[in-house]
Every structure is written in structure tokens, then in C-alpha cells.
Image 1 (cartoon, rainbow, N blue to C red):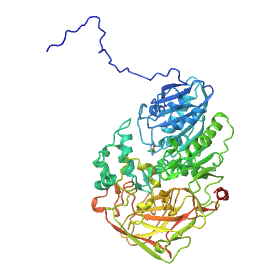
Image 2: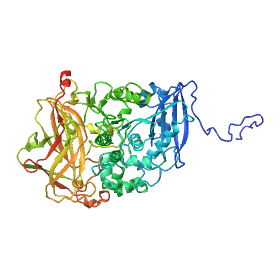
Image 3: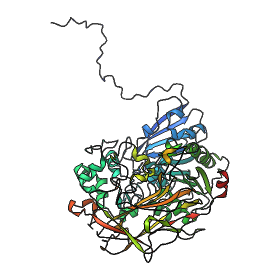
Image 4: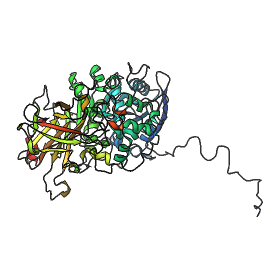
Length: 632
Ligand code: PG9
């Protein structure tokens, strides 16, 4: 059949030069209550950084809130295409929009629309960075540009910075040699020390969970697709691969410079020490009013904020250095705050944080608002289900606190007491072929279970022959803890290396008619891993002498909690948290990333009790707050 004859004259062709996609399209914003402006702001080395500025229509003499992100400034500043600024911006910006701030989002160099090269948490200028730019200089140059009336006539010349996680890290870096117009900062869950306790390692144990992130972030200037891990159960996927290094090689990670940096620097060497921001802050203590935010169940960065707060306090920064300990997981403060895992809170804790803590703090320093009157520490107490405030912090610690730490001892028959019992020992076989899962199998890194895994019921693991459990009698009186517990374990092993995982757990009463699923719940309130080879030095690991008792002493994540009457305190100890952390082969090898399958050997681990080697956890016990008792 032939096609019907086509008319050609007088017909407007559909197919035209350029096609249907214009070089630029922005949804119509007529009638909107803000203006969205985009700039490429030049840095001192000529590199231009993509910056989005949202300016309320009525803005005049208005302060600026800025965040610097590796996660796509365009998307971070456009939750929707709404005409109203409050709906266009992210949920966490709502308080600022209501208060009329100008909002600035910028892509860090090398990511998304910014020029330049991307280096993961680019080290500050110095031995690890011999260029003339870092996140400090980029922030400085950006602020210099923003407060120039020729560029942004509506500004009042004052800038505040805020952000969670990576966006918190860029906020911390801005504090080291700050621009004078930076008047206030709120680093939330910043990565501060990637080796001791934030994203990459915890006390030397590698967080395999970050594998996806590394491919997404460094496989492309935008967001790369991570490789398939070969199956739903990441427990199986990672076990099959052997070491984390072998897993990486099998998935093409050796092409990624940052992955190689991790693999080549497994100890706390000059790389990690040189990037530790709490040390840099201590050397360059900032006078900028700063509110550090440390979620109590932060599964990514549970170390950075609190250690930075402490580093500045150690330098005498007291009147302008504040801390919030929220009952949240990582970056939950950008979402909803009524619950976490099994925990349900009295009210919207995240909303409280934004409205009653952050906003008054910003208003005070950026708008000459009334004094925010923040206490030094605002901390949620999940045991009391309420916010508490502390004028000084911590209330109990090893040295120079109002109170010392109180040891609680592992005793015979699985008992846990405030006195050491008779000398004894408990043994278990730690087998790297059957590591203890961090979360019940199947473990999938993408299914969302990651978010609240630190609150998961530890009954899932209690009773395994390779998990040792010690618990107190049922408490007759409340026990309040506020500060950082210290694990202090004496143990021998038949291996030449090994990990120690210590958990401080609140055991709920067996019955709860109102909330039955909480009956007997084993809630971890502090949980940490420690790689045995680092027991004497983080920088210089050494083999464990087999069969010889060694001391494993390490600081655990900070708590602010009351164990209520009817509850018990429990300590659990085990040798793995897999696949979240890589496995220790238990045979000493120079670099665990390169351990071979034959290096992975079962070992008998013996925990010592009482006598000369009284294994214990030092708890920051403080007097009961009577006002809380009255409120019950
Ligand atoms: N925890 C993430 C991160 C921070 C800093 C460096 C790398 C990763 C994050 O949530 O941004």
C-alpha cells in the first residue's frame, strides 16, 4: 500500500531544529512569594561554584542561612516546584522560611553543577592538601560574595551555616578560619573523625555499610549507580567475598581513589589524624556561637559533634558553645521526630528542636533577636521521655567532672553488679565463618532497616553461644546516666587479633499492657566496636599475644538516660557486628582489607571477671533529677 499523498505547502513542520527540549526550562513561578536565583560564584583559584539563592519577595536587610552540600544543591533547594518558598524548600528549612530568611544552597567543588575537583571531605590546607583551596576558603569566598550588596542587595551582611552529616562537616570546616560575616553555626552529626567513630571506621573496624555510598558519591560528579551486590542478603554477599578489600576488588572499587585511600590507610595514621576536625578546632578554636547536634542513636556519625563540643570546651569556649543530644537517628532532624524504631516520644521532638532551639539561636545572632538563652546542653532522656537541660557537661566522667564514673562489673552466672564478684571467666567461640549479625537476617543495606538498627531489640542475639550477656537484678530505684560510658574489658583469646563489641542495654519489664511489644525489650543505649590490635595504640597496631589476658578499654557513645525501676541494666559482649562492620580474621595480618580466606580462624575468647582482671563498664551515673520524679 502506498502512503497517502502529503500536503507540504503551508504546513508548519513539527520536527524543527533543536527538537522539543529547550536548553533551559524552569517551571513558571509567576505569583511566587520568592525569587530563585542561580549563580556560579568564583573562588580564589578561578573555580566557580554553583549556588542557588532563594530570596523572599519582601526581603530587605535580611540574614542568610547557608548550607554547602555534595548532594545536589539544585535538588536540596527544590523539594517541590511550588510558588511558595516554604513548600519549595526542604522540610528542615520551614522554620527559617517562616522567619523570613534568605536561603542559600551551594554544590561543593567537583559535585553536581560546581566546577573543580571533588575530594571526599577535602582535607584542610596543609600537608594533606597542598592546593590553596579547601572548604574553609570556599566558604570564605562565597560569604565574601554573598555579603557584597552588588550581588545580593537584600542581605543584612550576616550569615549562619547549618547542615547535617556531610553538610555538617562543611559547616565545621567553615569555623576553622571563618569569614567575619559568619555569625552562627549549627553542625548536625558532622563527620569529624572518620577513623575513631564517624562514617568510615569505628575504632579501626571498617563500616562496610558505606560501600554503596562510596560508589554513588565518587563514581560520578552526580550520583552514580552502585554495583549490584549479587543478592538480597548482604550478610551472605559480604561473607562470600571474604575481606572488605576482596569485596571492593570484585565490585570494581579499585578504580575509585577514595576506596583505595581507605584500603591503603587502615590504621589511625597521618591521613586520619590530619583530617580529624576536633583536633583542628582545638588548634584554631572558634569564637562563633556554635550549637553542636549529636543524635543519641546516630548510626553514621555518633562521634563528631560531641567531640567537637568537648574540644572547644577544652579550649575555654563555654559561653558560645552548645550541645543538643536528640533522641534521633542520623539526620532524623530533617524528618519527623515523634518516634524512632520502637520508641515513641511525647511530642514532635524535631519540631521542638527547630522552633525552640535552632530558630531562637539564629534569630539572636543574625537578627539581633532576644537572647535565645540556650542552656549549655539540651538532651532528650528517653527513659524519662522528656527534654532535660544541663548547665555543665558532662556531669560524670573520668577526670575533671563533678562526679567520677561508676564501674559496673561482669560477675558469675551472668550477673552484673556494682561490686566485683569472685575471680572467674566466661568463654565463647567467635567464628568468623558465622559472625553475629548486626541486625536479624536477611540483612539488606537498602531496605531502610539501617535507619533504626541501633535501637533494635537485642533479644535477637541474646542467647547465642557467641554473645555473652550480663544483667543486674530488677532495679528498685531509678539509675540515671549522663555522659560517655567506658568499656574496660579484660580478656584472652586463642587468636592473634579480635574485635570486641560492647553494648549497654536497658531491659524493659517483661510485661507492658499498654505497649505489649515493649515487654522485655532490650534497648541498646550505647553500642560500640573496638578492633583488638589497637588496644595499645590506634596508630601502631600490634598482634594480640594468644592466651594472655589483655585490657581493652574504649570510650562508648554518649548517653543521657534513666533506667527506671522495674528495668534491668544489661551488658552484652560479642566479637562481630556483621555485615555492618567487616570481620576481623582473628589472625593478625598487616592489613585486614587484604586478609585471605585462610586467615579467618575461629578463636576462643575468654572474658575475665573479678580478682585482678575485673571486666567492667564505667557508667556516668549521676543523681536522679527529682523534678523528673515529681513529673511521673
Ligand atoms: N554520613 C554521610 C557522610 C558524611 C560525611 C562524609 C561521608 C558521608 C552523610 O549522611 O552525609
